[in-house]
Length: 104
Image 1 (cartoon, rainbow, N blue to C red):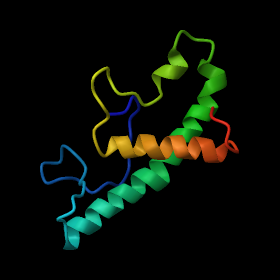
Image 2: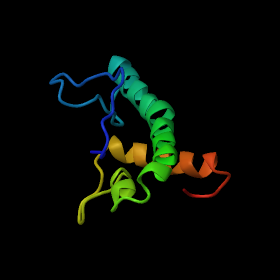
Image 3: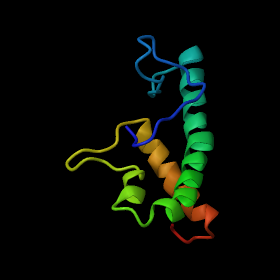
Image 4: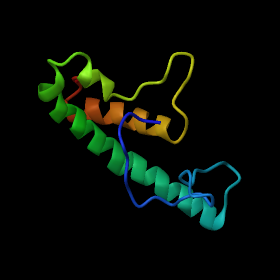
């Protein structure tokens, strides 16, 4: 997952332990639910996360790693699982776009 809490109007999986994610064989309501979650993550969560990082930098930059602790990171030998990896990708794109090409 991510080192921050994410709250939103996500479509939940039937077991309510994860959000609905898509695969290439989805159709109908399942496809709509998966697309909704993808849009929320890409268009709402990633830009909000980018803003958090921009605004937290002056507050946490002097602490021992505090600022870097809130960045999305995969554990050594691991990778971020979907759908959170897509948030990470959209986050870095938002950071570059929002800073005129300058990475925070």
